[in-house]
Image 1: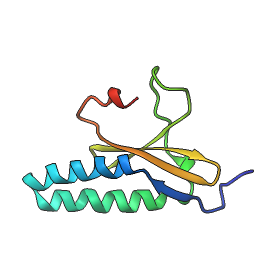
Image 2: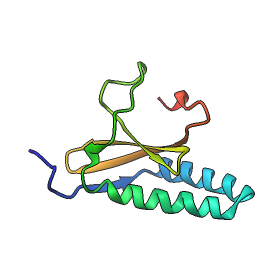
Image 3: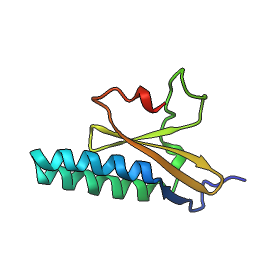
Image 4: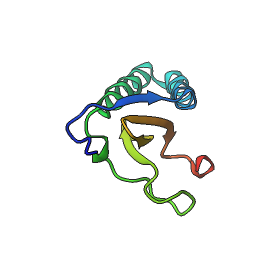
Length: 105
């Protein structure tokens, strides 16, 4: 079934929530406004996935199955990593692009 004109339900995993909170806590030590921007960016980006989640590119890595995860850039330095399963968009991780996140895969 083609879901392009329908609304998906976005589900944020507990792990992704904890990753986001960790990044926010770190940023808040340097700049509270930067931390607030990351939260705002996450909320608006995650919400936007309910419409056209296919618009973002695949996360390509030889260690993961091809075309399993998609990625969405947040606040210029963070990736929201998600997968589409039926009528659900599962947000599985929020990672800092400046760090090695291959352990996640």
